[in-house]
Image (cartoon, rainbow, N blue to C red):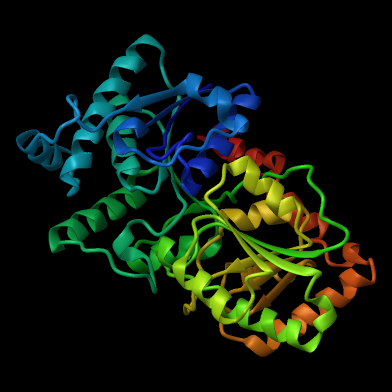
Length: 409
């Protein structure tokens, strides 16, 4: 079998979607499936680069395609391509055109069996539609987040013209109607897309794959780790403020913990979180690492006693954060500030998940006191996620589900 994976954001780009796609591609290759990835030319986009050794061999099967043939915007060609392919992002319309033409040439030399597109961005699925249509191939469209930026619920709004939103919504409906299979990482994201599109459709839930490391916690410390973006670095503006305030309360109640507890925030530093740390006099207990390589982030996760998940205050938690799957596969208990009606809440039926509403300081304080007591009594195994929960996000389990879907097609 030969699979064409269209993943615009792909490693070594330092991006959560790039990591999720890379894990799936590695899983396909491990199982003997010939896989070719088509991606943005990251050298043109000047993205942050992740040089983790785990992605090393993927460059050999990745074809980088720039949006413009001469690295400059071509207004007339952009408009023509936008009209031809039905995309309102005129710069990316050139990329769509370049990819479709390249893939058709590749197919003549060595035929593909399946087209597999992954988003964000949604232009991946525009390519998926046109390639599958022109080559007569089955097409799987994987949607990891809300279809496009203007459809993110309770998020800061990007500037979109009415034309862009109309064209984006049109592409969503066309994808849901014409793809041979739609996949999502969570049931709630699937149902969210049914609501916003008005199109009931069959889909499969294929969770993210979690990775781990062999680092162990410092036995002399109680360490909490949050990995990923926060605040101004993230579209939903998630804030760790509630966790920091409750953490301060715990230290004030139990002064003997002052030199034993710490929080490590792994990822781009958020000015608001940093300022709160200073205002609460927590600078000796809180560490901000800044951006780190993906494999380094796994070491921080595995060095934790407990991992932190912060979601925005929203009516429904539709997301499955990829860092959550890394936490679970690393066998770490998770304190989740997450909506009562949401994906993480659905998983809280399993051992190892301590969920509180994003603004519920009382429940969070109770969880922290309970967890700290268990850790100090050397009973950390009581907190760990259940084997059943861990298995949901292992590479073996996820790839069995995905390859089963591919074989059906």
